[in-house]
Image (tube, rainbow, N blue to C red; front, side, top):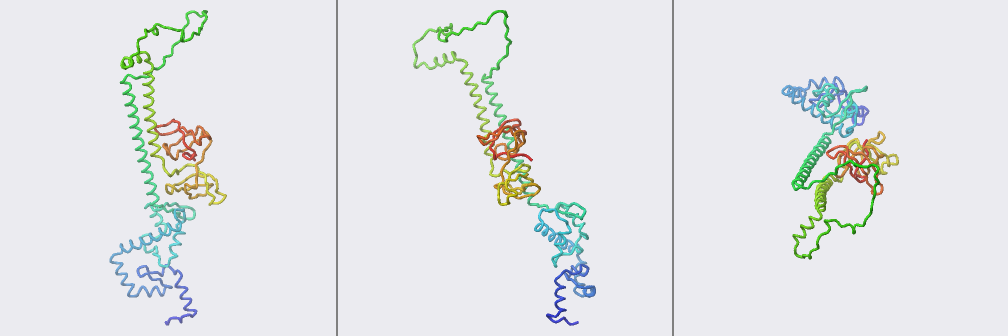
Length: 390
């Protein structure tokens, strides 16, 4: 039968038919040929080229099935990742996008005979989250790179926490050694002893006489004056220490106190340097939107951080709407006194605490730690270093 003339109605109709998708039962995947009707498909099956392709398929059919399956899965996942992202979507909608391509790999040429079987494969292999609803199967793409980034962040935080615990243990050992050395040197704090006041005669009146100190002379103070010895420093030091034994004890106690204070201050400075970062976002805290680019609806609105995209970006749930925002467009939220907060930056980064006082004059907060080795300790942090917990 001769071909229709170019520009005729028949030629235009044939061209329109060739552009659209034809019936799947008239498609040959081995030859990658689409036939329009049953007669054309029957003629193709008896052709010499088709017979040669069948012989090649019969020699190694498993390799062909694996190749077709790999190409179909690749095209399906590419459309799911680029067009729908991590949104929950019906699997059939994604499949309809796949078959819009005229040269797509047909599912009857793969190891999966139905879309349900393919969806179950994606769920079992961990590439997608799947669930079945009233309208069929739903899938949600799992971003493997994001999971890897999240695992790295968790591992890094765990490593930093282990290092902090080791430093705290080392600090405790240093404090205990310092106390032992001072005990060996004979420096001990004298604890006051409580004694009961006993009066022999209840009827006796109590008399108090006030006498100037200069008029009181005891036996110890009546000491014979000796000539001043300018160069006899050893005797002067000994006599001075004998006259004022309490001063040596006070100096020793002050030195003891200063030693512990120095160790504690050094620990605080080390933790501050280590945990002070240029990023502060954490999951589960309440933040305030401070950018006007999203409109007046979201300006100064409060929401919860539900997911961290990276160190500087987070997904914030604001009244049911999930917004992807940079930390420069967010700020911390201060709750009422007595509420729980999370320290998001500084020495106690990542520690939960209770708000005790808001120091408005100093622009800082007084918090009581609720966890960790310093549980129960009161610390002062800046407004931007702590935020309300969801």
